[in-house]
Amino acid sequence: YEDVWFHAADGTRLHAWFCPRDSPRAVVLFAHGNAGNLADRGWLMKSLQRDLHVSSLIFDYRGYGRSEGSPSVEGAVQDARAARTVLAGKAGVPETEIVLYGRSLGAAVAVQLGAELAPRGLILESTFSSLRDVAAHHYPYLAWVVPRDKLDSASRIVKYHGPLLQSHGDADATIPYSLGKKFFEAANEPKEFVTIHGADHNDPQSSEYYERLDAFIDDFVRR
Image 1 (cartoon, rainbow, N blue to C red):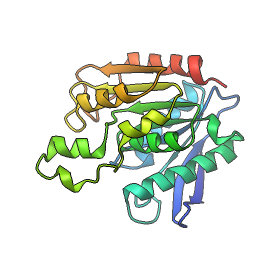
Image 2 (image 1 turned 120 degrees about the vertical axis):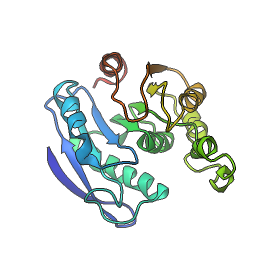
Image 3 (image 1 turned 30 degrees about the vertical axis):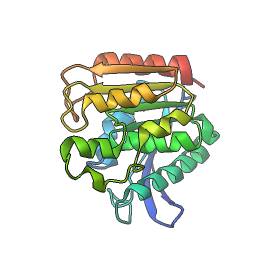
């Protein structure tokens, strides 16, 4: 892998890893969740590179890992836009050829980008219909403080008409399974939903899911 330093539109300095592969089947931008940083996902980057034969870039949002600045929802989306541009340059492809792959918060960020500029494909793990829906599940009397349009993924996904692969654990206590299904129902075809049976939010994906991920790359996004 290669350490990559770049800047968001507002000048915030960010850190990423670029993991290239000769003759890749796809070029993937990975947006991680709210906890940890890119170093915690090294195993996934290795798997994407070695097992799925794709080139990928993983980045830390501002305030995470070695990236500078302070975390914010708006900042995370801005950081992802900049990371997509950097990956396009590194891989030598248009930004529309990049597959957006996100987990939890990162999945919502990927949806925001996908609604602005259609990617080659969307891969989303443990995502939600909207941030307000998540707040309403955990804090029903305080959910009103979250603006309705704050990471409103279910409204944004209707603007995307490319292939979608989505997964969710049916024992997820952080982002309820029902909110993942609500988002999926709002999405356009072609789309596929994989249930991770018995899995909580941070539990690993199933072998069935990785088989479907491999097939998704072959069927929809292989270059």
